[in-house]
Amino acid sequence: MTSIAHISDTHFGTEDAPVCEALRRALLHAAPDLVVLSGDITQRARRAQFRAARAFLDSLAPLPVLALPGNHDLPLFDLFTRFTGPYRRYLRHVCPTLAPLWQGQALAVVGVNSTRVLRHKHGALPAALVRQVAQQIAELPQAFKVVALHHPLAVIEAGDARNRARGADDALAEWTGAGADLILGGHIHLPYCILAGPASRQAVLLQAGTAMSTRRRGGQANSFNLVNFDAGGGRRMTIEQRDYNAHARAFACVSVRQAVFSAAGWVLDPGPRP
Ligand SMILES: [Fe+2]
Image (tube, rainbow, N blue to C red; front, side, top):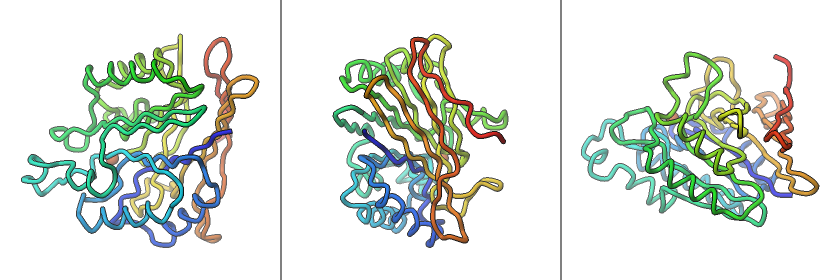
């Protein structure tokens, strides 16, 4: 069995210190094979914020981390840096590549950069990038293929439609067609798990809330996701959402979803009633 923890939108600079420590404990205790951090790692792409993020990621050792930038990881007000070296601090402090790939025996995770210097907070997936990622997915030998990016490819609330990455429909069609099983995203600080993509071949789309920032959306708690991949006797994914409980000062499981691969593609159980 392989597992990943999916955290997002840490927004260092606005982190809630007790939540940060509880997250560190929860991740080390869960001991996944990989931690995926789907962007907005810092609040304003400042050096001190990247250094704090680096210290946090180092504190997760020996867990490997696959990270992606979010729109907040590009300088916003420092226009000189935004246009001359927008990813310089990210590449130096977080990850030396914008196209990370992690491969285990049964699972591969492809990281995709959905931020664009000229798009401010909105994301975009150019056609050439979508095709390149689809080809990469198709060539991976693992039983489970995961794509991670910052901006959501599908949303559940009408007001979030503008937050989808430009090119999201093409990306969903091409990546699911190439065999993507799970697509991870963040950005809107709203956790949910749905099927997405053309009816002929859907993938499970999993969004994470903000893992430790005080920039929580509505009544949402800080949260992260834990996914178990089981390739024995049919492919199955078990997806847990873990929310921060302020009284217990710890993260606890609040929902468990099962996704099973059948002849008709991925089937997702209906999940907890609202
Ligand atoms: Fe974002």
